Length: 171
Image (cartoon, rainbow, N blue to C red; front, side):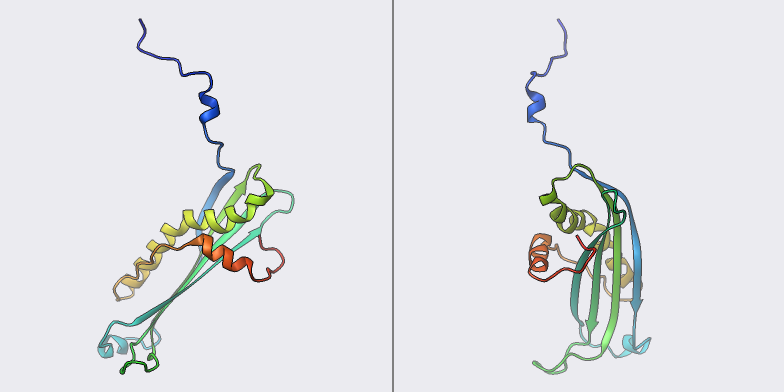
């Protein structure tokens, strides 16, 4: 008797199709961290700053004859001094961190109706952990508690983006 078993012939039908996506390279396209008030902010900051996060995703075809795209996930994190009184305007900037993180991807035999969601939802979802780590590290290395970005609903972001006209060259 043999210890090996033969899989049923119909197992091939149960295998999901391969993802039509290859991430060729990921990279930091642009990174900026600034503390506008300089060292003074460390002496005068009395409360946790208010942090605002802005997110954008862009996708552009790199080669007209090939399905190769650049996807850029851009994050801007701005910390402002907490207002002195409830309801007052926030104070001066504590720090500003900006990151544009790119991925060059190839789509292979992707149905036309899936190209946009793959580029604007799936790719950002895959590269987001790297973006979160970079923002956390750069804010910590800048002398502040790390900013830990919370999970992002890229489907909702994509749907919101679809309600606005797109510029030429975007996916």
